[in-house]
Image (tube, rainbow over all chains, first blue to last red):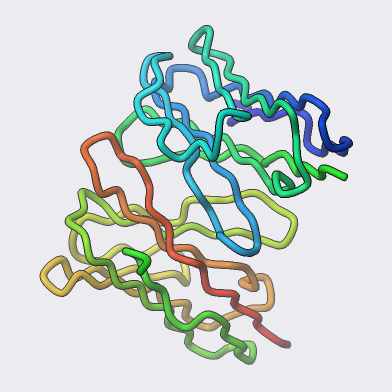
Length: 112
Length: 109
């Protein structure tokens, strides 16, 4: 299996632009998690899905952030409009149980 | 106050030394995880524990549920062990992670 796939690996954009991050979970996994990592706050859970349904989005910072999972093999995290404070590494992880998670390589986002 | 506390924040060791990283948590958990993150790299799961002890190569992880404490030990440390080690707990029935701040480990030759 290829593991969790994220794209793009790096994204540089200007403030105010829309950013879309993509994730393909491991086939057969029914949990998908989006995390953000910054130097100041470490790893934070943004949102997670079970069987394509959002279960907990309390970690989403504000209305500028949205996430979707239209099917079992694809999820997106969108930021519109982006701001410099959104600069971070965004990780996607998937799981077939409630405990063990497999992380993607991350997307490094820089908002100028 | 973070519900998952790690110590130390930073650790430097010489090659061959025994390393211990500690994790304390204040919530009830279904499992505790140790993760490894190399510079510029992704995150790899090392161990998932709900009781007792696990060993993988030179890495040993222990957990004491009553004391709400876990330790990660690295025996005969090597420069390639240099990484950030993160403790995470699954505190609810959905498996949502709560993370410690991480321990930066540097092993010098």
